[in-house]
Amino acid sequence: QVQLVESGGGLVQPGGSLRLSCAASGSIFRSIFSIYAMGWYRQAPGKQRELVASIISSGSTNYANSVRGRFTISRDNAKNTVYLQMNSLKPEDTAVYYCHAARDVYAYWGQGTQVTVSS
Image (cartoon, rainbow, N blue to C red; front, side):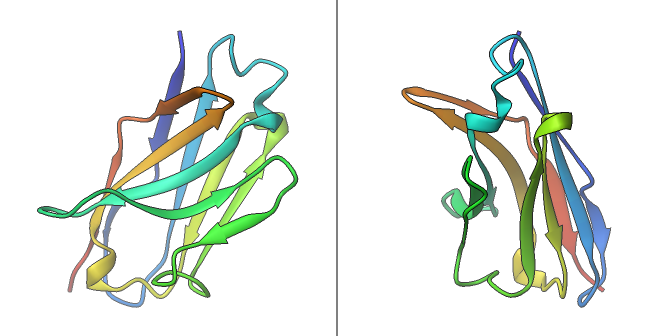
């Protein structure tokens, strides 16, 4: 069974920080998690899901303009886990954050974790 389980969401004040984690489990990830392109997406109410950050097997990263310089994506292949460190959070960062894994024609989503930035 394939699972991407996100954690670390919650309520934070503007200017605060959160660290999201996404743990991948299942036979398709065993021993080959490192070759998956991993990404974090988010979806705010009434808006389309958008890419926040991604990291490929080489470690190369990509960020949405709206989060560049504030968010950092990283991965620990030994733990089959990808992280999203979010600093200087703004109210407009409020959304459900989803983990995504892709390889060749295969793609998988997590169930999402809510991030709310509010005073």
